[in-house]
Image 1 (cartoon, one colour):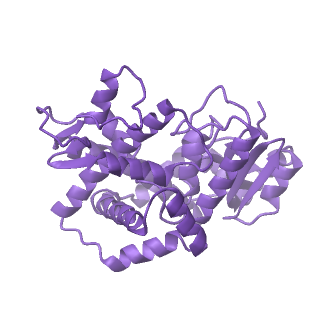
Image 2: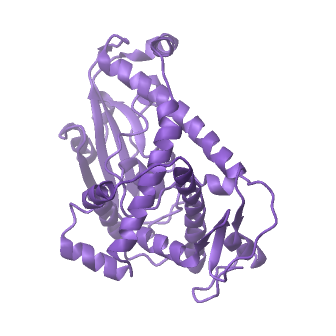
Image 3: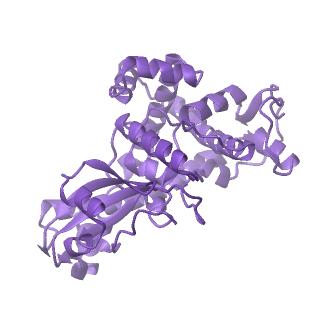
Amino acid sequence: MARQAAWPHTMDAMNTLTSPLVRLHTALFVVLALAGLAGACRSTPAAPTASSPDAWASVNSHEIKRDEVEKAYRRAAQDNATPSEEEVTTAKLGLLNELIVQELLVAKARELKIELPDTEVDTAFAEGKKNIAPDTFQKSLAARNLTEADMREAVRRDLLTQKVIQREVTAKVVVTDQEVTDFFNANRAQFNRAEDAYHIAQIAVTPVPEAQIANRTGDDAKTPQEAAAKAQMLMERLKAGVAFGDLAADFSEDPQSAPRGGDLGFVPISALQQAPPALRDAVLKSEPGSVRVVSNGGAHTIVLVVAKDTAGQKDPSMPAVKEAITGALRGRREQLLRAAYLTEIRNGSVVVNHLAKRLVELQGKALPAAAPAAK
C-alpha cells in the first residue's frame, strides 16, 4: 500500500486526556452527524401513516422529502468524485438517518421553547464562509445547485440541535474533584513522562484501493488523481471551519486512527526522530494548532499538531493536568448521556424510513436517480 508512514505511538492514559481533539468552527457544509443512531435505535411500533409520494421518511407528523436529502448530499458531496450508484444511494440513506435524528432534535427545541435569533445564524453563516472568496462561494453553490437560503437553513437547524444537546446533555454532566483525583491515582505511573512528546493527529489519503476502510463514510481514493483531489477538498473544508476530528473520522484512510478522529496521541521525541524527515519536520517545526500537508508518491498525510508536553511527573495540582482529566471524564460521560438521550426521544416518536423499506424491497439495488420516491 502506498501509505505515507506508520506513526509510532501509544494510546496511554495521558493520550486520553486531550481526546476528542480540539474542535474548530461550526461545520457549514455538512449535516449534523450523530453516529447513525437513528438507524440503530427502534421507535415505538406504529402502523405507517399515509405519506406524500416524495417523502423519504416521516418523523411523527413531519415528512422528510427527497429534495431535502438530495440537498444534503450535494452539500456534502466530494468534488471531482465519481461514486457508483450504490455508493450514492448508501450515502443518501446515511444522510437520511442523520436528518431523522436532526428532526427529532429540532422538534425537541420547539418543545423546550429554545429560541435562535437571526443574528446567531448570521454570525455562524459568516464564520463558515469567511475564508472562501465570494465568487468561489457563489460558483460552488451554483455547481451544487444550492442557494444561500439552503445553506442558511442547514446552519439554522444545526445550531438548534446544538442548543438542545447543550441544554439536555452537556449542561447536565458534572465531574467532581474527587473523580479527577481517583482517575489520577488509578493511572499515576502513566502521568510520568520520560521525555518531551507531541500530541498529533492525522488524515491519511492514499492513491490506491485500501483493503480495510474504517472511516464513517467508506470513502477511499483509488488513484493518484482522486487522492490529490481528496486532499485538496479536505484542506478546503478545514479552511472553511470543519472540525479536523470530524473530517478524519469521515475520510481518513488509516484504519487505526480514523475511528478516533485521526488521534495518534502523544508521540515521544525519540519516536518522532524515526519518522520520515518530511513527517518529522511537519511536527517538530510546527506550533500547536497548526496543520500541514505532507505528500509523497501520490499519498498525502494531513498532520495536526494538537499540543506539546514536557518530560516529568504530572499531578492534578497542575491546571493543565486537572483540565485534561476533567475533559476526558466529561467527554466519556457526555457520549454516554447523548446516546441515551437520543434513544429516549426516538423511543417516544413514530419514525418511518420509507427509503430504507424501498431499498429492502429492491434487494440492495441502487435507487435510480430518476426513480420516484419510495412510498
